Length: 378
Ligand code: MG
Image (cartoon, rainbow, N blue to C red; front, top):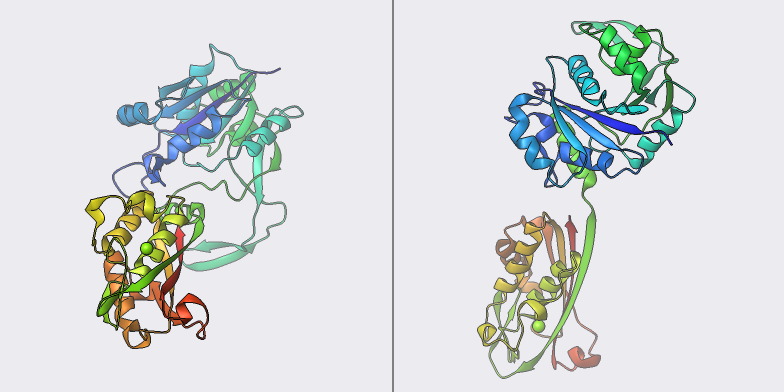
């Protein structure tokens, strides 16, 4: 079986990106881009070793992010991408792998399937480029003026990883050092070698701007839904707590805390959306600490846990089920109260009410039930 190394090019300073850090070190959902890229190659069964060409100024931050990855070596890159690749290939020359995949550090979404497909393509070719279709109409411009429309026929966009037979690409890079070629396939072509394509992957984007990073982050988030349900029985008293508001009534609600049935259902819905157990686990009724506790603390705690996990609340929808007290007159104030507790916009909170037409325990006015559905983005 042939040996295959990966060379990841991460020496650029990312002037198009803005910010203090080069783009390959920007965080993507809590993990630096380059670390995600490394993970794709280090975790691939066909890759034996990984060399990363970095800028000398980034040695510290790179050492930190590469922790825990075996068979990764950093080498100092050069002034241009082409120089960095050549220096990376020289660093691999003593190991002399059969094949090398050369990849942009700022393409963190490279899939195991694409890596395998490039390697597979090298059975029949000395060089392989993943290629995707050109969808938009192409124009040649002069300033803002369109000069001509360029035919898309036979045009593709070249991605990385680009795969090569190692001795051939090393020789080609040595021979063409100092030329300003934008990718390694171009080096091979210039040296007179044939390069073929395999289907690329639209998800394998190169992060170049902050907008790229923002849309990538959004595409990686997932929507989850949690639901909660709670019941409290009526007892002596002259008011009930509902959605953090004191609502006058002929009875109170019985409970260990303030018995705010609506906030309890909401708390369980949020916890449920990210699999964090239930309200009883976080605030055991057996704990004296929570006797008479104001339930806004439960809801806020659940939401803080969600935020710590990188989640945000998209929407919280509550249904209060009772004959009395009438919820309608308090509905707007309830929405405001919950929005305040969670520090979210009011349009993200909905409070509804229904009776059960006199049926069941709520119909007999023995207590109040509440249901909640929380939609969160993780
Ligand atoms: Mg409860």
